[in-house]
Every structure is written in C-alpha cells, then in structure tokens.
Length: 342
Image 1 (spheres, rainbow, N blue to C red):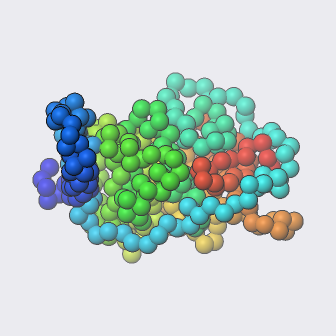
Image 2 (tube, rainbow, N blue to C red):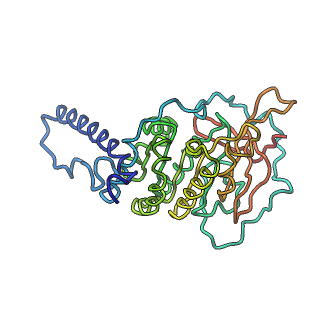
C-alpha cells in the first residue's frame, strides 16, 4: 500500500516522533544526572526495543503512523469522565436480587470462543461472555459513560495479554491516554510496550478515506496482532454523510470490514433524541452482534436521576433482559446486577 493511501501510516508517525523527542529529552536529563557513572550499553540501560520509540514494532510502523497527520479533534470529554456520583448510589434501589423470568441461567451451548467485556456486574449478566469477533455497540446519551465503557473494554484485554487498538474521532490521543492513566489503567505503559495503539483522526478525514480504510483494516490489524478494537464514536462518522442511502451503505461496508478483520470490536454511538433504545441514525444497532443501552432514568418516585443499563441483544449468548442500575466512579463503570431500578 502506498504512503498516499495508508491511513494508518499517516496518522501515527507524529505520535512516534513526539514520543521519541520526549524520550530523547528524558535521556539527556538522565545523562546529566549520571556523569559520574560508567556508560552503559543501550541494551543494558533498557533502551528502545525492536518495536521502536513508538512501541509499535517494525512490522506495525504503518499502523502506528496512521492518524496523526489528520486534523486534531477538539473539545473536551463528553461528560462521561465527570464523576460526581454519590458513594451511596446503590442504596436507592431495592436489593431484591435475581434476574427475573427474562434470564435463562445457563450458558449458551456452543463451541464459540467468548470474551468478557471487563465491566463488573455486566459480565455476570452475560453467561459465557460475548462471542469473539463480535461487533458490539454501546448506545447512550451524553454523560452515560460510553467512552469509559470503551476504555474498560480495551483495558480488560490488555490486562490479559491481548493487543488492542483504540480509535477516537472525538478526542486527541493524549487526552484519551491521560484520562485512562488517571483511573489507574496505565494505557501509556501499554502503548510504550507496543501492545496498544491509540490513534485519533478527524471524522471528515476518516469519511473521505473510508474506502481505503476498509480495504486496509484487516491486513493492518492482523499485522499488529490486535484482538480488540474500539471506535469512539461511530455517530461522528455517520454525521459526515448527508444522504441517508450513502450513510447506510458506507457504515454497512465499514462494519463488514471490522468483522472481517478478526477482532472483537466495540463502537460507541449517540442515542437518538426520541428513544434511548435507538442510535442517532438507527443503523448500527442492526449491524451489531451485541447492543448495550446506557441511559438516564427519571422515575417519578426518585428525586435523583439514575443511570441504567440494558442488554438489548447479544447473538449466540444467553443474557439478562432486565434493566440494571450502574454507577460511574473513578474506577470506571460498575453495574449493580442484584439491584432493581424499578
């Protein structure tokens, strides 16, 4: 593939250059502090390994370079990262326990390999886990924790020795990494070790290059060895197409490319203004294998607005069909599966 068409290569080169400059500055400081010590070899001193300064590996240099030359997305986090929830959140719900008649308490009988999402309480609501290589959609309004959801999904894989890719259309790479590091998830370390690629791209740039992205995605993901991928958010990509028919076809082709890439993919999506159970454009929930709905609930007998999660569907898996309360804290999302919200 040419440099002209290589969307991954264009995006990550600046990340590697920036990290290399930071490392050079740190090394100069270390050299100043160690004038009295004998010089060490690069290998003995723990210098850059075969993956290079960016930590992506020689074979994956073009992935890591992919998005950084695109226009930098602006704005702050959408409110997902604002944690002001009272510690006594769960006390407002009846602790009756159980899943009710909508839950078959047996794992789905199949030989399909499965993965956990990595969210406390939610994984227990999915018996056996989500089938590998599924396309998962997290649909919700502003402030319901969609970005946090995606970060936890990636972190869970990294903690189990997987390689992951996080693509953001809303934030800068540094903003995403810093947000995760503040929660103790240390994405910067995983990126430095070459196990994580965090790339940002302007949605206009991605829409203009979507055909080439879809064509290259499978080979590049395979080369990197990624098993999980997050796109935050698909709604911004959908917004780039004025014609509904083209929007549907482009998102369909991209979804097919994600499934063909052999990774378990999570995309976040804004909910429509009319219904929490429908994405902004009503497309991704039909293409996804699993859909998680994140929403605010305002029942008349509660003075405080609550957050609630529901599993709308998971193909080839048994799961709870009840709406369960959840909380966003400094440690991420926790679902209270033994509590009832209504």
